[in-house]
Image (tube, rainbow, N blue to C red; front, top):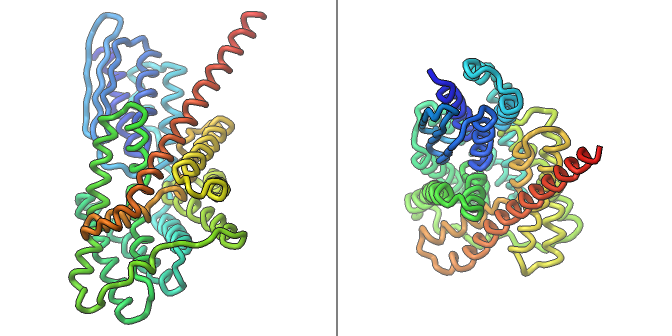
Length: 422
């Protein structure tokens, strides 16, 4: 077996595992290219998608090799992603014997939280999100009940490898049936706030932002594929709500949609509550993403910082959603990059939990609901804000990446100049 084949076998498996754990395609491509060049390979080609890895390269003897494999569905595990990233750095910098590469990869062990801790993370996050959407105590209890059910369904569908689209439909249908029956019994006063909050358990928020980012940063093919996946998954969620409604329409009547729309004036009291709730949301999802205890505090603080800047920018430019969303996303990305450098960890570890408060899941829900029910007014009311939010978040990330990239270049040239003077 040739050297290039050992290297590509390793890169194929490394890239596959990184994507499954939640890595962005750009980062995966960059890691693979750097490893290949470190071993003297050339004509390196990475045609990677979130669904498929495809690599090729030549060695110094002009021996050509190609590897490809399918990638399973993403299951965010940022602790394992951190270890995979560290391994890529180690291999790039030390170039160990190629025959040992697969062994190095198999030695990585994940310190995964037990299921009950991840469940607690979900419960905390869902409770905080419910309060952000102005859910009352009774609605919060239903949200937590549905979260327990969704967690069990998710475990079951993962074991039997059920399609995500089908799983989302079943999950949201059952959540909606429970909420509607309780609404019909006058045990809760707001059906939609329960549905919107529980939808966050299923909505592919990170993938939604990544697909917009890929489209803007030149990775159009992957962006389009991700966009189509997100659209189908979200539509299956809303279809579950619609199916429950049509099934129980005669029993519950038409739940007041207007009750679910959150419109509140920002003041010191509710701004403080939003900041605290954002801390809990980011902390809860940090546990879900398997971020270990020593990093959870930093990840949760990121959500708090992002919410503070979001509120400040919103107060400064209340009529420019694109602008204040973009600036808040820039702050999230910058915070993650600074922590990544100072703590020598991948920035993704802090970025994903930090941006949870920015994900416009409510706007996505409202817009999709309008499309499913043919309500053009609903689409026209929330669709533009949804588009502006996604584009703003993506541009904020791209701007931060550009600033950090050139900042590192300037630092590198300054160091090089200083070394030459010595």
